[in-house]
Each structure stands twice: as C-alpha cells, then as structure tokens.
Length: 193
Image (cartoon, rainbow, N blue to C red; front, side, top):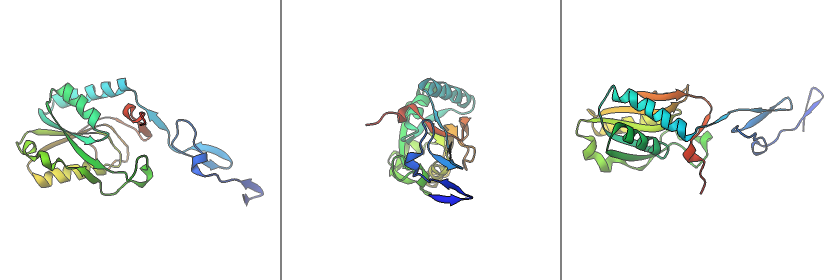
C-alpha cells in the first residue's frame, strides 16, 4: 500500500487488471480504467472491406501478382486475389513482434523468416505487384518490405494495401479500408491451437 494524502492505493499487477474487451487497464484514484479497447472484426466485415478496396484497385492498376505478408496478410491477400482475378499469390514471411501476443515489444527492424527472394523471376517482369497486409500499425513492416523489394529491383511497380491503418502509422498504403486506433482482433486470430 502507498499512502497519499491520507488515502491508500493498492497497485495491482497488469494481469489482474483485465476487463473483457480491453487489452489492459490501469488504476487511477482507485478506479479501474481501460487503456486500449479491442475491436473484434467479423468475417462479413473482412469480406466487405476487401471487396470495397479491390473495387478501388481495379479502377487504378492491373495487378498481376499479390504478395501476402505472412501471417496477418495471407487471408486478405487470398480474398484480394479472388476479387481481382489474380492467380499469382506469393507469401513473404516477415515478423514485427518477438513472440505471439508480445505487442508492446515490437521489433524496430522486422525479421524475415520466409524470403520472397526465391520467387524473384515473377517479380522482375515489370508488372504491377500488390503487397497486402491486415493492418499498417506502426508502418515498419510495409516500409521494410517495399525497401527490400526495391533494392532487389528498383524499377518494380509496387503498390500496397491493408484492411486497416492506425492513425499514427508511419506508412500509409496506397489503399486501405478504415482507420482505427483500438487493438484489432481479426476473425482468424480467435482460433487457438
């Protein structure tokens, strides 16, 4: 207990402060307050958002190859491919978090665990390539991937898209669906092994 102005405050560890629907809470003057709200996205919202974004893309470019950022961007990339009628869907394994769920300790420089370099011939044809991820949070992953690919082939026609962006992202994709600041929980993240 800490005594302040003749009031006693009991500080509890974060694991004891969780309120359903919120990532974490904090105590302020003895009141439990949410710090970051979770937004649960439905499958129908994902499908609708993908269709809406793809309608904008169809009016702008002719995509020949889609690169899905593993893992969060793989499902949106597949939905984009169906909507845009693109057969070539590649996966680029890049992680920005050290451990599952350790979102507070984001890695400044993302780590490649599945290199797109093995698919290089498809990327060097001069066609329009679309990189898809679920969210542009801080923007580090998109910046890293676009820089990495442009170092491989500076004349590559790269475009980017995400279902969501955060207001303070340092990378705004060419197309995105919505801006949110709350923690986003996608339908595919609800399944635990």
